[in-house]
Length: 269
Image (cartoon, rainbow, N blue to C red; front, side):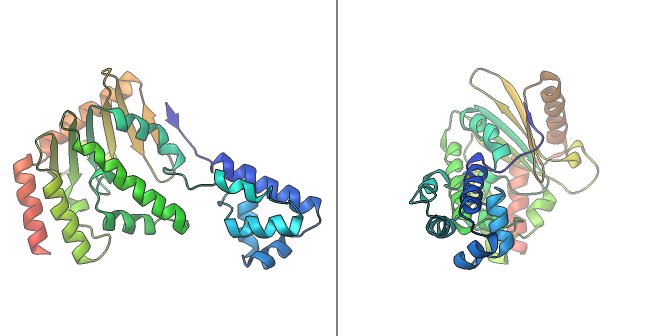
């Protein structure tokens, strides 16, 4: 089960195409629509091609210029921001029901462990930048996912590379708060957080991944890149990543030493 590529949401593409059809049918140029809605020509083009989410303002202006009598504005209800990037939807569905989650991260603090300030800094760094509505929806969704950690009958295991813990994604105070948050959230017995020292080579250098086990004991693995995500059910692939995780655990600090490491790092900043 893989996602090699992703396209913008179908609703964006369909709505954008409807705007284009109405505009061309009534002889309204793209330049005229851009001027009337106070958008750049390329922005209108991106919306019509479905690469950007059509905004309410653009729909209202297009509806009036094209005499659509509310038919274009009616699309608003179908253009709510997507909670997840399309390629991560399958993963989040399995994550929600998994009884065991084991994660290795060598670039970012795992989303389940991020503070709001860290999540906001990371989403703000995305390119192309999301609109404000999408940004707030994605932040709220990421924070809501963290309620999964409250289920004490599930097991959550995180190994985080030392370099990630030292990288500030925002100011010093935000970073210290994030480190202290890791200490607090890793205290319950069903959650373990371990640090991978930034010395020597190990299998985790090839990239981050997550292992999942469902209530039916199905084993899955997930890898994510810049613009793609892969969810694996193939036993051979999952087993290979499980072996890598086992080797990573051998090199990582134990939970107690990891907590001391994070505490010391927070004090030194």
